[in-house]
Image 1 (cartoon, rainbow, N blue to C red):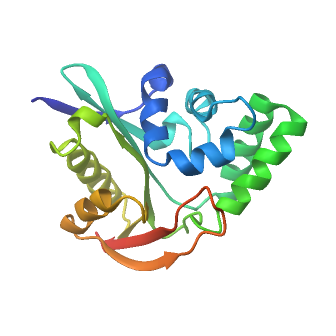
Image 2: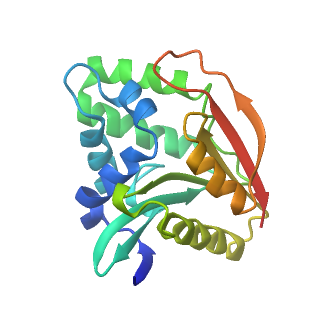
Image 3: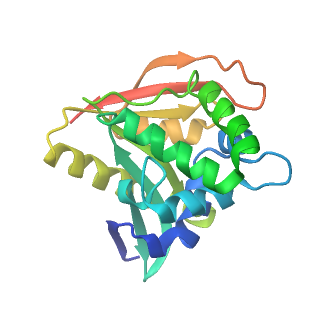
Length: 201
């Protein structure tokens, strides 16, 4: 199996958005799926836009024989206002002011469980692999790429959040040297508890 990891581009939105969604469907549905809306539609919109944490500029994709099979992101919290404004603009552009205000409120609630990164950490997020390829090394290769790129940029630690309902993913991260440093109980019935994991670079 030939795998290629490369920076994402706006043309990857249709293929990457469902993979990003797979990284946290419960949280994404809670925030971005009001009424009959689909969270994947917002993620596609934001990915193609390029700005902020959901934009293509923070993401990489993994190709297997030329087909995108995984996606993930690596970024920090050095520009929180910029990310916040980008997300607000994407939300209001996708949902309009009334529905968008509710989406923003739910997003802020989820930040109690999955807090944004600080500027000194490489935050690894939105890691999604096509189901039929899970357990075959695709996710490990993508995370290794993100960690190598982060180390090259001068980060000294990598951080991620994993759902307590996803022990398989947690086991992979533990094999890669991550350790749980904190567990946050979720006050939201639809969103599971999350564990923060860290490792040095």
